[in-house]
Length: 188
Image (cartoon, rainbow, N blue to C red):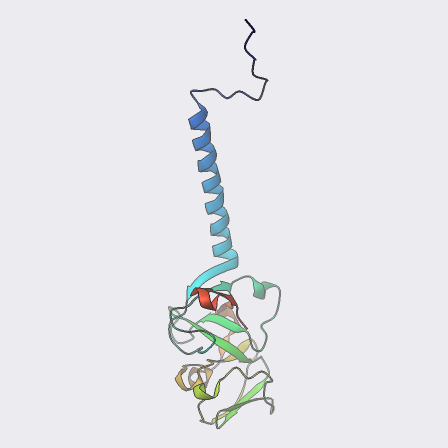
């Protein structure tokens, strides 16, 4: 009778402890995944729920977006960026608006038409049905501050009402919609 084949080294796992090794490996993988997710959420991207209609039509009430909390450590805030910041009059609330005026700019609104340094800012994010036709006096944006407006101008509480936003209050750039699925994609 032929002799049974012997297992080669490395091919044999101890029968009694195999389940324990598998469980330890699974737990290790879960812990590493949780740590990586926590680092990403705390330092890089934060999921946020949009509340309100001030950014329609680009963002609507109850949409879920990712905010990049790290980007402004490496690049400057640009005109047209959609930023998330602590509301200047109540720092327990965060707002989301579009940057219109940069430090040193003069922003004026004449019957709903925005002028930055005497000229239209270039990109017009506001659909006709969301425009207001009010006029506001010229405001020179002070150093380290930003003039922000909602895209739904006739229903937005923004720099026209409470002034500019200090740079230190801005904590991220809205970059990506992930819910609902039909709006999935990069923000512009």
